Amino acid sequence: MTELTKADIERICSQQLFYLPYFRGMLRAVEQSFYEQQELEEPIYDLGAGDGHFAWALFEDQQVVGVDPWWQPLLEAESRKVYPLLVQAEGAKVPVADGGFGSAISNSVLEHIPEVQPVLEEVARVLKPGGKFYFAVPNRRFVTDLWGMKVLSSMGLKRLALDYSRFFNKIARHIHLDPPEIWIERLKKAGFDQVDYWNYFPVKAMHQLERGHAAGLPNLLWKKLFNKWVLFRSRKNPFIPFEKVASLVENPYDEEGTCTFYIARRQA
Image 1 (cartoon, rainbow, N blue to C red):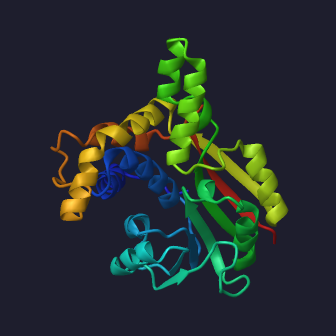
Image 2: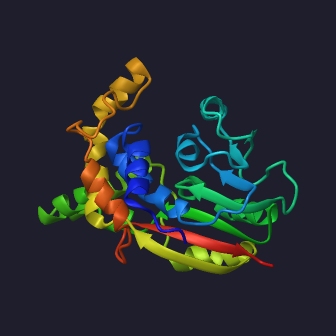
């Protein structure tokens, strides 16, 4: 692993917090720091390229193929000039050759896919033997430890707290909020023989992200009016918790964290 410098951390925070609503940017900054510490062998398969912002922040002059089922985000991704090739395809069936990629990534994507097993099998197919798959997903704490649940439960409204959990994860389009043993079982079934993982993003940070969905409404307005999530891209912007996020990126690991990062090796 490559150790990040203070300058690296500040750059990562700027790339995320200056271009995304802070509650999304704080999570993406932590995740970007994990990928940057890995040696991603090229060419790289990016499952769930979306609008390309994450790849724009992460990659520079690397051979990366982006895959996504939605055309509109791919148009935005193309405009960022990061991917030499973008492919519109479902993750379970991608028109690329077997074993053509040295590594694969998928950031906060797999939890949204209803039939995820065929997608994992497709990732294994396109990776060369021994190639590694790096991905990040939220875990069960997004079901059990939400801030809104704690507030409602403290008031004795336990049924309403459960309803809140279901509502929040429905609007977040979370389908698979699973513990490591379930992901490991899926990965081994798909053709991976070694899986490492760690938890990150403490409960307190998840609560800030959760409340940020409401506090970030002005960002949505600015995006619609000016096509920018953040109007004032500066550490002096009082609505950007730059130092707090930098501290989180510098110390990201948490055994009780609400998200999990996985590194799975394709069978040799």
